[in-house]
Image 1 (spheres, rainbow, N blue to C red):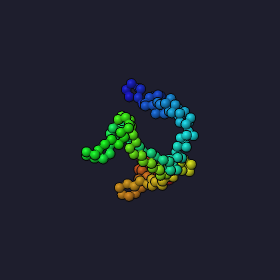
Image 2 (cartoon, helix red, strand yellow; image 1 turned 60 degrees about the vertical axis):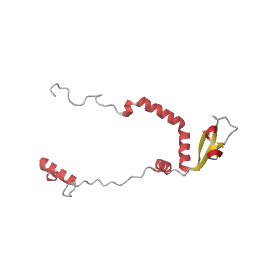
Image 3 (cartoon, helix red, strand yellow; image 1 turned 30 degrees about the vertical axis):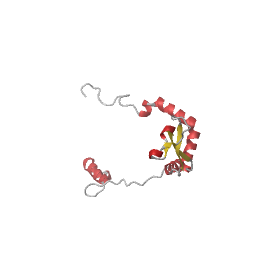
Image 4 (cartoon, helix red, strand yellow; image 1 turned 90 degrees about the vertical axis):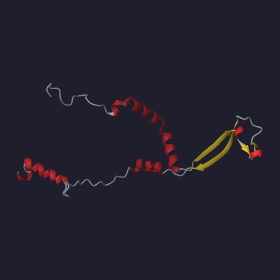
Length: 146
């Protein structure tokens, strides 16, 4: 550059998220650390399944009737019209959570690695690294010759 100040300078550029949010990350880590036994227990409960899930529907007593047409009448005549009454209750048992089980297994045994083919071929099917090496050798000479 003309002013002699080009290039990277110390402290220049965007701060890393870990540096930018260091205090928030530390606060979150403290909260999680304090609750870690309960969090682990929750994860194990999800993984095992079997816990009850209860869904209830409540309506004001004045909205619930029995019969139809001229025979329709309040289902709860002795209740205040605004008092909530239980209309339905459904209880289900949770199945074991596959994702929670997989997470726990991966934490102990390590996440399985996948084999990735890193060979990159050029348009002619030849490995790209070979073409690059040939180009370097043309410019700088072959190391095998020295």
